[in-house]
Every structure is written in C-alpha cells, then in structure tokens.
Image 1: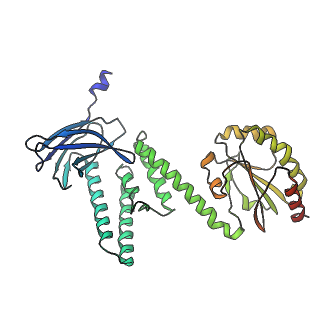
Image 2: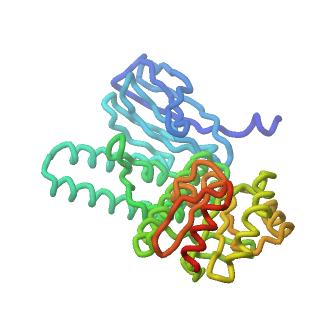
Image 3: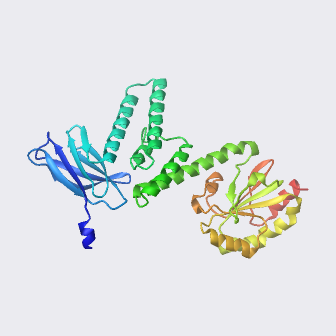
Length: 352
C-alpha cells in the first residue's frame, strides 16, 4: 500500500494566459464518452497544475476544456510531466510528452480534413479530399503501430453514420495494429476496445467474402474448423445435397435429435450423395468435441468457437437453433426437420 501511495502520478502544468482566475475542466476519455475528473481554477496568471492517476501500462487520454472549448488533448503515461500553453480558442503547444504532441498533430489533421470537406459540394473534390485524408491516416497508422495515438485515428468519423475507415478490408489493418498494441499495452482498455472493433470488422469481412462467393453456387459457402482444427468448406464436399444444420451441443434435446433424426437420414442417403454439415454454436469447443466423439457422429462437424457471434449465423440469418437448410445445385431451401418426411421426399427426388 505504501508503494502504491508513492507511485508518481502524471502531472499537468497548464497556462491559459487569456483566462486568469477561470475554471478549466479536466476530462478523461472513457471509451466513447468524456468523464469529468475535476474542475480546476487558474491563478492570476492563468496557470493551473493538476495530477492524474495513471496505471502502469494503461495510458490515459486526458482533455482540458475552457467553457465548451477543448483547449488541450493529452496522452499521459504514469509519471508523465507535461507543460501546456493554451489559449481560449483551442490553440495550444505541449512539451514533455511525445505522445501528446503526436495526438495534437493528428487532431489538427482531422480538423483540416473536416474543414476541407465542409468547404465544397463538388463530388469529385469531396472524393479527392476524403481519399487524401484516408491515405494520410493509413500512412500514420502504419508508421506508429506501437502508439496509442492510432486508436482515435482508426475511430475517426466522416459523419455520425460513416467512419473514415469504412472499407471491409480495413479489418486487416485493424488486426495488425491491435496485435501490435497488445504487445505494448496489454492492459489498456483502449486496446481492448480496439480488439472488439477489430473482431466485429473481421466478422463483417468474412460475411462479405461469403456473400460475394455465393453467386457462383446459389448459396453462401462456409469454411469452418472441424475437431482436428482444419477448416472444412461446404463447397468442397462434393455432395449432391448438403444439409446445413445449426445446433447447440449444450442442449440435451439437440443431442437426442442427432441420434433420433439426423443419423437415420444420413445412414440412408449418404451413399447416394448426401452429406450433413453440422455447425455447433456452443462457444465451448472442448465440450462440443466431447459430444461429437461420444455420439460418434459420422458427418461433417464444425465450430468456430465464436458462439452467437459466429459469422455463419449472420450469413444465413439464423436467429434460433436448431435451424436447417438443404443446399443443392438448384439453390437453398429452409428445411423443417420436425418430422423428417419433407426432407426424405426431397432427397428421394434429388438423389433417385
């Protein structure tokens, strides 16, 4: 406890010469909102001093506001001592923190971008401005993989609905940055937020790839890991008819369904060109593997470990399990397996 009490905080010395004996708000970026830490009054010369708690390995984004104007943006590490000279219009300089200086430069670039976009209505010029800023951001991010200043850059918005990084393939850049930052700041909540956004973008990229490739087959393909860890693609099964079956290995009724309904159908039609591609939505892959082995299920069993967040569910718009689809050269049909008769008749028609 004594050691913790002696741990140096980050210290801010700020002078706002135009605002003597005035209140300055100190705010902390708490993910996507600003949390007011304190309100500090400047002295007769417009100077204030403030200390911020910063944990080891978890730098903080701290902002100073005069009334409703942001007058300084800082990225502080434990033990930082920064000096800020600001005016009441939002212009400032900072010394003692290279990361804060980087943050200031990126915010200036973003402000110029927004001003340039607001200065014209010409589509060609708007496109040019946007592409130039996007490329500048990519260049900065690629050159500063170990800096937390890339996080606000990656989350920049063109407007409330459109991120600057709005291409599906940006997920690749997000993953590269995220993996790099995790080695430097594994405890940072900003990195954890970036990890969540990266996963969301990777999921969207996978869905796009699946949907783009669906046109050739008449249905979206899936390529998910089996128990061995190797990925198995539906399009590579070579079957005349594939039953895509979504289930939950933690549900006892689903396990009974495997043996009572699916197994007899598979045994009857597999030799004639029928296969089952069974997608488990249980995120516990060890438990799933145990069920598959215990039941000795002979068809294709896959699980990506993402549970409800699996892109396969979004691709096939599955809102509940069990859900099944019959995939053939003719396309895709939703299949009711409650009795099994409808599927049997369809298989008899296709595989006769």
